[in-house]
Image (cartoon, rainbow, N blue to C red; front, side):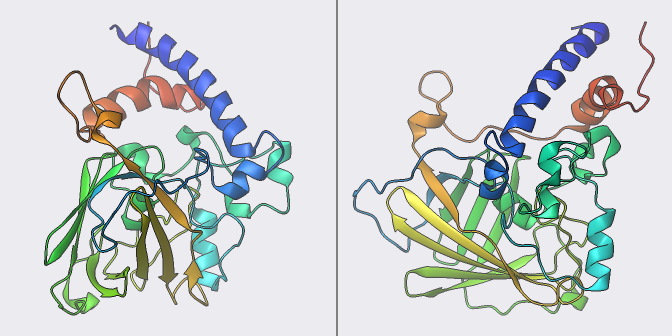
Length: 301
């Protein structure tokens, strides 16, 4: 495909997808879709099949893009400053009527075109832990062993491990920060409680630009409530940015069968959905995203 055709196609796709995203994120009936966090797929109903509550294995797909759809965190001055410096492209677009809805958190009504924003994922950087867990469109796979809980994410082909062998969390100052941090978990009845420290402070909590710092710690509570339903709540404690812990909305994951992700005949599994700089940064951003956002890209003849 020539670069000229790629640009024309990309412009059409950007216009079409932008209209759809605006309708989804701003809410067809006001701010309702914003408050719900998007990604609605109908009501999840238990299928009544037998299951082991302490076996979370399988492929799952969540129902949230954002961390909390109704409440803003309690900011420290540094937290507010860092939040206002983020320029996301999700939510209601600045200047639209939906962006004026006072009952929707400000984080969900300040979107600008991606080329004018500073979302680090546009350059194929990792999402970061909480943002990965909240990434609605793509599934993740959980593999459990006696000593580890491993998650593999289709989007960006990332992975994360949680140690279940009784080890303590490391002292953050003694270890390099990680995009997915250092995680250890234990069972409290049928709920797997996972604690994480050592997060890279450049990551956002979600697509709406809520920040983290090197003092952040994350608690996840995983609960398999049915064979086909897995629930998660996340609490972020970050005294540098937030004056009190901030709890997420309930995230509900739907069990995905092999047939749901089959490719061709006889092959199923997660797609290798990597973000490749050769394609994303050197091609799409320069040829499509930047020109569409009014940012100079490359000259086309």
